[in-house]
Length: 215
Image (cartoon, rainbow, N blue to C red; front, side):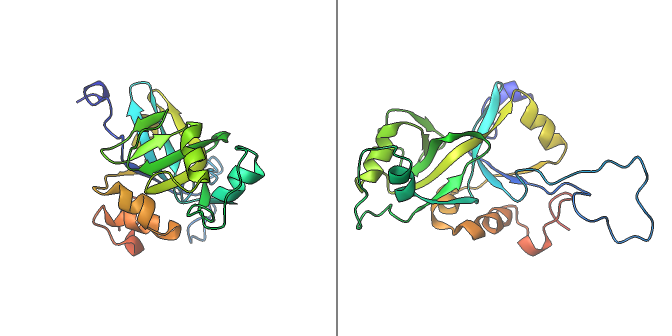
């Protein structure tokens, strides 16, 4: 079947970035590589796990969910002067980390959250996970309210029409279906999310390789 028959076929999936072959030291061989062998480098997404928020005939976009920026929600709100508010010491979002969501629009916040709620600009990704870009959600978090769970990021990863399909065919990404995306997004520690995602493939993360997903 064609993608047009599945207009949102990978929406709600996770994409695991695969290391490029030859990106690091050559394989253990006494022979040098051929002179015309391509030299590949690590990409900005190496080691990244992306939650795909939308995928259709016009393209795709998602949020990197395992790479922290070093900022907290408090620092984002107060330090960047986004809102004219002070985050109180008892605010439950105070020390929550902010993530690098991708290389596009790093000056803009993208918030994955559960439940969907009623916010001004929310994209429904699944039955209980949404992605909001409107200021009202951040304002609610600044006052200690907001959704039950949230992952705040700066920037996103985007693909033009057909680009993601081409990269999937080149094994740049491994698509992973996760029945309970909220568990991975909001209840797994950042450094455990890749392993949790790999386990959804029925593969032991210790045996996961770039060739076909498992050894």
